[in-house]
Image 1 (cartoon, rainbow, N blue to C red):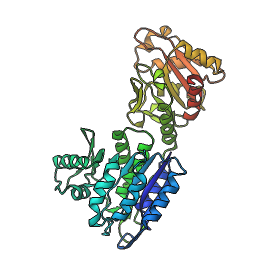
Image 2: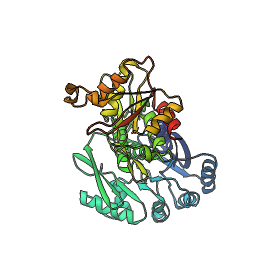
Image 3: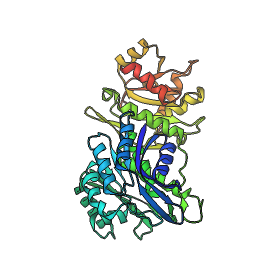
Amino acid sequence: MQVLSIAGSDPSSGAGIQGDIKTFTVLGAYGFSVITAITSQNTTKFFDVQPVLPSIIKSQLKSILSDFKVDAIKIGMVYNKKTIMAIHAELRNVKVPIILDPIFESTTGGILLQKDSISYFKRLLMPMAYVITPNVFEAEKLTNVKIRSLADLKKAAKMIQNMGARCVVIKGGHLQRSKVIDVLLEGNRFYTFSHNKIAFVGHGGGCTFSAALCVNIATGKKLKDAIKSAQEFTLQSMKNAAKLGKGLSIVRQKRIDSIENDLSHAIKQFVGIERIHEYIPECQTNFVYSEKNPISTVNILGLEGRIVKTGKLVTIAGILKYGGSRHVASAVLQMTKKFPSIRSALNIKYDTETIEKAIAKRLSVSSYDRNAEPQKVKNKEGKTISWGIKNAIKTTRMPPDIIYHRESIGKEPMILIFGENPKTVLTKLLKIVR
């Protein structure tokens, strides 16, 4: 996963290019950068700013876009109309989701977008944005609407959308409330996100949110889930903030959970497999990855929702959460008791042809009969999968690649593919579907 930040340089590394690269790295993405301006600032004062020549901005953009695949782009500080025009000239035909983060002033008081450039910002950059992420102050600047309530947030979001941005999220942290309310307008639908206000007077929160959102969108998350995840990441970074200088605290991004990173990548690859909709069962698909030596399903990461199909489209519904999966996680939990190296699995639709393909590709296959399930197991919620996997591996010396069961009364037949990690699970799946 590769993402690009177009922004100003912040020597304190709390925000700007440096802050974005920190967030990208912690979230497991490779970050490219195009610098639009050089600022001189620290935690107590904003000293100076010097814009980069438009020709250099164009050259930087060409150098990245001509050589690398970029999965998402974040635009932050643009400073003046010449910068805006240069960015627009290079990105107007690029088919990559753009996250536009309006940055008008620094937390230490510096002007980061000249007043005579706001009209250019609206006319040239906003129509390119997949999503724009102003805070209350920035939304007021864009709309000339005083925002004091949830109704005002929604009104401003609609006005901003009418200026060209496809989706709008307004961060409500600057409203005088005990709870922070953020509003998302996606198409014609509004969503709200809320959390308790935390005591934070610092530098880099806004950049952290938009950079995290950029990574989440690059991974293929639905926008609502991408925002929720970015919000949680930003809150944690704000709670971890450190007073490194004499003034404002600086956010510190918490290192990414490698389990979440690996599973997120694998899920994105899964939904991109050609004709994968043909393998999604009626109960839909989940994909899980466990910590080492799990005690319960709480130690196993999975989708709180499912990977679902609508016609030939396959989408990710829900966010990754430990304990988010019950059935597929229970299967992995039981498998690890005998084979600790097996920590990942996903479920697909049962079909005899699929099993035959697996055997032909020399994948090891085992099964169990749900009709033989004891009544005392049937009567205990969530025990069926554990019983089935335990029986399927009872006499095996090596962990099977696949375990399946056929249809029984009220139970859909199913195939489970197991592996040491999500990557090996996908490798086995691809042997079957290609």
